[in-house]
Image (cartoon, rainbow, N blue to C red):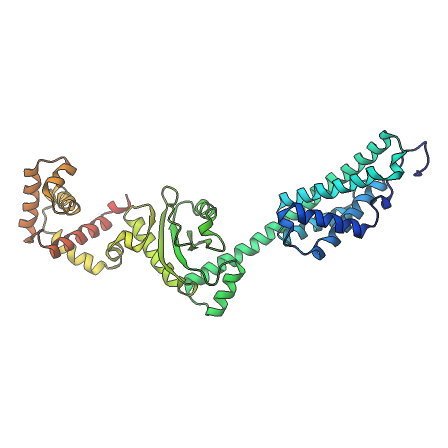
Length: 384
């Protein structure tokens, strides 16, 4: 089949785009001007692959044949390279539209095709677009595979980073090197967090959508079925329903292990007392101490809870608890419990009679509150 044989369909000449290297440079310039994802990439990293891709596209079209397996593999490599350079798939697709558009424009402007029938030109362009479609499938596949590998590698590094922070065993230099690799700011101020949740994968995904939880401000990973990491201390947004999110104190990167230790205590305390949401150590007051010091809790429970007769314990202790929460105001206690004030006063008096303690004594009131929280913790009511 000859280019000049009028009895046969004319084929595309490889020279139609002019100098391949100059064409690739021209296309690269357009990509960097029109697509933000390409702007930070050196032209030297883009031009060779553009030239090779156009060459394969033109050759397949000129020979009026599909792309062969080797060419498809080359296009998969083209897509993988874009992923490695940090070009998202949608930006690469837009870039390929520019490449093909430039090729079509060169063909349309060629003197060789100016004298050819319109049907002949349309036939060649159809062949070009078929090859382009096959190339698109191939390079998209290559991009996705490479992106998945990059993500897995980054996930592994990220998980290792969070695990190292939790263990607190890394030397400062290695800690900073790993932090820099995952995109954290070395001079940043962070707060560690631990989220206890029944759906760790969903919670991990949800937190990663928040700017304060992803690089350069934070990092999120799943560790022992909890969602763990560091975040921007200024991010005070609440987690989704049912998640117990403990946040540690603000600190430099080197102090994150301590912050994470506190965050873990806060999250576990919130879970044990059935308080979902975002909490800090200050938010929970002395509840973490109630959880952590069973000797004190046991002694106070023996002193203030055990003497109350089992038959009366429920109503009396509930009234005492509400009385303490109401600031030792009997009228407010009755209002909260829908009780007559005489009933409230009887129950409070009965408690003081059985325990030999006065709730008006601030020290006693504090101890009774601790005993009630320890009772709640051990009765299962805290987790109900």
